[in-house]
Length: 95
Image 1 (cartoon, helix red, strand yellow):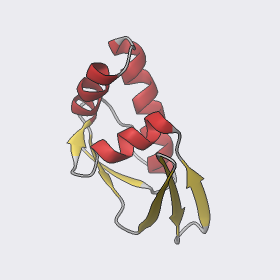
Image 2 (spheres, helix red, strand yellow):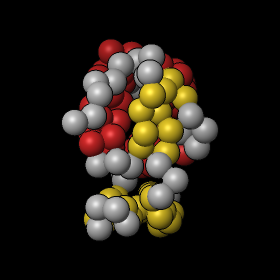
Image 3 (cartoon, helix red, strand yellow):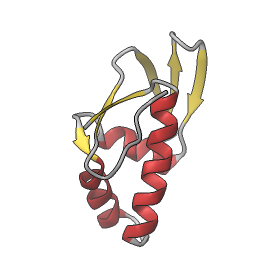
Image 4 (cartoon, helix red, strand yellow):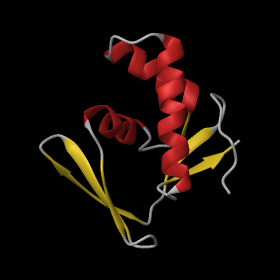
C-alpha cells in the first residue's frame, strides 16, 4: 500500500514509464504493470509540471494560475489524481 499524500508531499515521475505526446495529451506505458495510461489535458499538464520533483502545493499553485478553479477543488483533485498515479507506480511520493 502506498503512503497517503498531502500538499507537502513531493511528487516525481517514475523514470521507468514510457511516454509519448499525441495531440497535446500524454500516453504512457508501465512496463512493470503491463498497462497503458492516457492523460487528459489537465493531467498531461500535471505530468509536465512534475518533470522535476515538486511539492503538491507548488503543483497546485501553478495550476491555479492557468485554470479557473478554486484552491480547495484544485488540491482535492490533484491529490486524488496523484494518489491514483502513485498506486499504479507512475509517480513516486516522498514526504
